[in-house]
Length: 397
Image 1 (cartoon, helix red, strand yellow):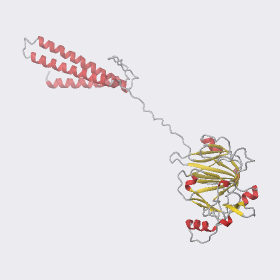
Image 2 (tube, rainbow, N blue to C red):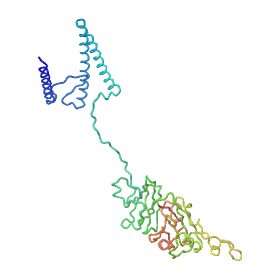
Image 3 (cartoon, rainbow, N blue to C red):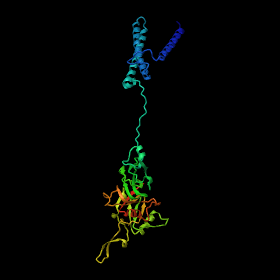
Image 4 (cartoon, rainbow, N blue to C red):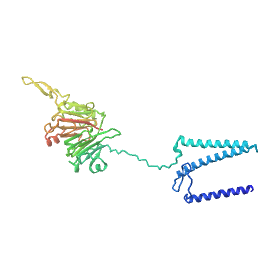
């Protein structure tokens, strides 16, 4: 058989093997394949199973070829006396076989020793990561028509009357007397807190309930007709609040706030400044504890008389009663004058309870936001028959 015939036979053999193998795979492995190094494949085997099988099959085949090559080398060495050049061929074949064996063993050791999982072919399905997103409520003040400040988005939608941050409601209208609980949600990013005061009458007057922002949920008195809502200022930097004994009018449009304050100091018969440094957090004082300064001597009240009935000692008036006639709010503050009735209330006056009568400034009618040039006590005196005895000042943003 010449060289051309040999090549033709080799080509025909390869084609025959390809068609035979394709027929076998087309029949979904109806022929049982042998188990090689505890690995086997069936018709239900997956792609990783095939890869593992042929890896171990190739390793076993390589070992078999090495073993067979070593036998051939031995046979060639045995027949070397008859043909001396076989010694060199035998040694070369044996050396190549041993090298191949070392390569196979090294490859297997690398795969199984450094990471045993590399010898296990698996296809792990990729799952979408389950990321739990923390549900956070929007910061602000929540007004509910049910008790207990309900949790959950559906409950809030069913029972929330209002949700806001800096909007005062001067008239609740349909929701008058229906607020039963109030919840504060602080802004976690900025740290902002909120304050709210419920009023019995529209336009922020009448009986009121101040709600401490440090308490997340409050029970409301179910009497509110208006609500004052503000963002609390932890670091106020404004001037303060001025209380004047006499009304302070000045119609000069050229006067700015500082000039107006100077004018009122000279013409109001005495004043009291509650400076920003005095306010601190929330300023809560009895008006009996506060006195006007710079009151003209002749206008001070007499505190001591001589035997002849002449005044020997005088003192400045207190801010209680109807002695406050004007207020100038020089900065971002809310001023609430309140009346606390110690007989009607069950506990002493504190900064977190229902007060008998209240009036907040600036009022909705105060377009300048500076406070009243002339305080009218009709809302408190005519409706409640009382005058304020406490003052609350809240710094707001």
